[in-house]
Amino acid sequence: MHLFRRSQVLPGEEFAALRSRLHGRLHLPFEAGWDAARTAWQLAVDQRPVAVVEAADVVDVSLTVREARRLGLAVAPQSTGHGAGTIDASGAVLVRTRGLDAVAVDPGPAVARVGSGATAGALAEAAQRHGLAAVLGMAPSVGVVGMTLGGGLGWFARSHGLAANSVTAIEGIDATGAVVRADASHHPDLFWAARGGVAPIIVTALEVSLHRIGDLQAGTLMWPIEATAEVVRAWGAWITGLPEAVTSLVRVLRFPPAPGIPEPVRGRSFVAVEAALQISPPEAEDLLAPLRALNPVMDTIHPMAPVDLGPLHGDPPDPSPAIGSSVLLKEISPAALEAFITAALAEPSEALVSVELRHLAGAVAPGRGTGGAVCDVDGEGLVYCVGMIPAPQLAAAVTSAAGAVVDAVGPFASARVVKNFAERPVDAAALYGPATDRLGRIVESWDPHGMIRVGHPIPVASV
Ligand SMILES: Cc1cc2nc3c(=O)[nH]c(=O)nc-3n(C[C@H](O)[C@H](O)[C@H](O)COP(=O)(O)OP(=O)(O)OC[C@H]3O[C@@H](n4cnc5c(N)ncnc54)[C@H](O)[C@@H]3O)c2cc1C
Figure (cartoon, rainbow, N blue to C red):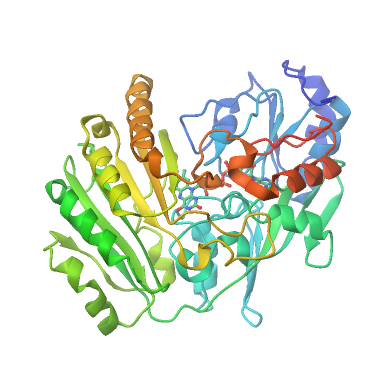
């Protein structure tokens, strides 16, 4: 029996005790600031919780869980709201942890303690101050906790694996309101589940290993969209036998004619290769020669520090409305590349700002990561396409264009879905594969009545 499903708007008096004790803020419907408080980074999602708590510290999170439990309400943890499409916040207390944004780096053992409100960009900057780097996703504005719970695929994927594999401890508040810490020797089941699977707690901090990155050359090569077939085929040949020190992707980009877009690319369309190469400048020169021989109109690849990778993928820094879809490819075969080219150039794809294909394998290949529920990716390539929807009437065209890309590359798909690139709830077995049943049992043991709503709900026997 699911005990935490009340969805009506509760009278403000019900929350008076919680409000008086919080260090942070409680927001209720019809009060000033309600819409701002319930708005996620992903503006395409309209969240309708019964209350929003902006936690200022761990005590606030615990108080909120205890009070929600007394009221028979579920709680939905959220940091930035980049992944808001995967969670059902309706009728729940939305617990926003973005105020817990401290990042502390201990350079000796090369570890960072990261609050559950810290962004990837903040962790990258803190690590860089000590000559270190974190394994992160590509976008600096995402929350470290949400990104890591979903695996975390970024510029060091092929050399260092998923971000989840760098986690050494996780702390949070469980469904009873108690503080919990999980690591290799405490609550090993929870520690296993949280790495790439599900954390049935409200996470308040993570501890992660940091890494020393030596030489790093990174940037973008760009050609007019008319060169797409030639460039995608050349990239497909280029990644064959590529060292794991190189992570790259190819994408078709259609920049809208919007004032915020830099003048040289505004309103124009390109095919681009983005790459991060952990090799010396002369080695990079040699390796990149076949791509540079195709005469890119823009070439920004240059030596940089890991923190400078932040803007490379061009993710929007501010909250945005977008709809995206992904397909994990078993292999980046010639036939899969042709399907990608056709889909990216098809007329409906003009509704999409980006259609990309990421090269995986290397350190994310099956069997390379260990210790967590999902510590690798069962496919060599990840297709992700996305369109902006500044006006609601554009959603249908973007959804249909993204669906057409998914259908076109579908024959080459793996049975699995990459959690961070699934923007709407997905069947647990597709996300977690053989880890699904054990994850269900762990979720049930920590949260038997489904009080904590996680992204991509996982079925448990008693709910
Ligand atoms: C523009 C953009 C670019 C992206 N690029 C990449 C990329 O390159 N690589 C990659 O791997 N991913 C990428 N992502 C996906 C992103 O990593 C996921 O959406 C991730 O879940 C975002 O985490 P968040 O904390 O920012 O979002 P939120 O929506 O706040 O959180 C997402 C989910 O994480 C869980 N969660 C968050 N905070 C807590 C908490 N305190 N306690 C317990 N659970 C919590 C919840 O289940 C929540 O629903 C991108 C997303 C966007 C929108």
